[in-house]
Length: 583
Figure 1 (cartoon, rainbow, N blue to C red):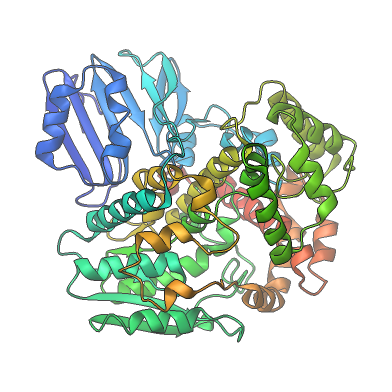
Figure 2: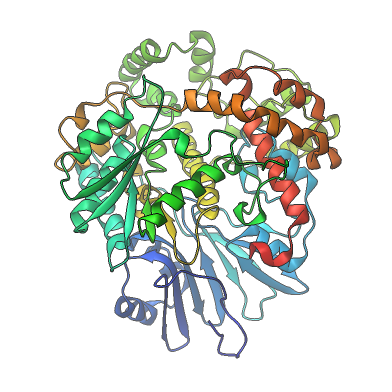
């Protein structure tokens, strides 16, 4: 898209039908992605937009997931999504500011160098807010989810302002269910319009099943995929078949788990060569570990003509809620909180002492982060590990982190702790928003592994309109220890099969992870013999070699190890990638 000056304004490789442009006088609007707005509505909107704040409501007034770019009085305004599924990055080229939706594309354009401190931070299992938005490149800055980037008319100045705020959680379950129903129906309809073939995940869980049932109402025919987990304790396939039985027009394809690469499978080839560059996300992420599985699943979908694939990612984070809400509820409705905590203890068996300490703790987020940072610098926790009711988990350095990397990490944490503010004043709302943003970031990176001009993955639960609808419900009704996802069940009570509304279990991939690790650990272990992270002075390979000689266990292998593998593979490929490979 060309600026009135004749120079390029917006450029990209974009899927057909996902770009809409309108103008009125000196105002131009561009919508990129899936959006419910029509060409006529966008033109009418352009006539009404005179100030940047007029853009604020559009992100939730319109259904879908999209970037919005506006030219108003010579200034350019660029915003992604509040969920973090669509991002904006910016950096300086001489005196000019440039923006992109991929950090690596911008880094190539700016010839940016690695930021070793930011890369070291990515080795933490859980990076605390606000350091989650640090990119691994110098001169490449992320715009926080829910904020917009504004560029001056000459491109020499920039500003970042918030356009989205989480709604006040005041709706009852009944009213919230009606709003969520409408948001999900519209989200699916936006993707279902047109003649292109769409497919869907049908995992057997409530989230993907609900989307499949809604999509089946919009399409004369639909293909859905279910993976058969070899774990006999996993009930997902049974529930998926129950749902499929209610959709006679559905083409239901069940495939064995071994039809996809196993856990850690496909990350290196027979000669030990890691993933190709075009599979990489734009930032280090454990999403890299899932990239081969996502690409294999995409090939199955495209073999059935799919141009767009629906998944249920994001539903868990929206519908199960953060445990920090119990901290908030203890102060507003103590009797109800105690009753809920008793039930949670019976269900999960959490340790009472650290839980009680964190539930009674009234420290600010800044104080909590400063305390955790000081403990990390001493390389020992000052007390028993945080419970799920704290501001966040205990900060721990993986055993393979070098002293230099540990120093870089603690420096960054100290600097952040001096000014850090939570995403919300209440602990539960902060935890919810952080989980949503982290999930949006992760799913965005998974999508990058498979998205092409003729195939688009879609996660409707991460649409801002859907996020807004869920967060507007009172948390004690949206989430309870006595019911699995009551808000979604109420929203889709007449859509989901009656049998599925009684489901109280959830499958996991523990067996697949254990078998995949055993099958591929020797291949992956070879990475540490020529580690890019070791060359940068960030890790000591020997503890990792030892880890890969041990049998799989969730405690040892579940969190820090995939995070480090993701960083290693990303760093190797980013160092050798030609500029054009990732744009």
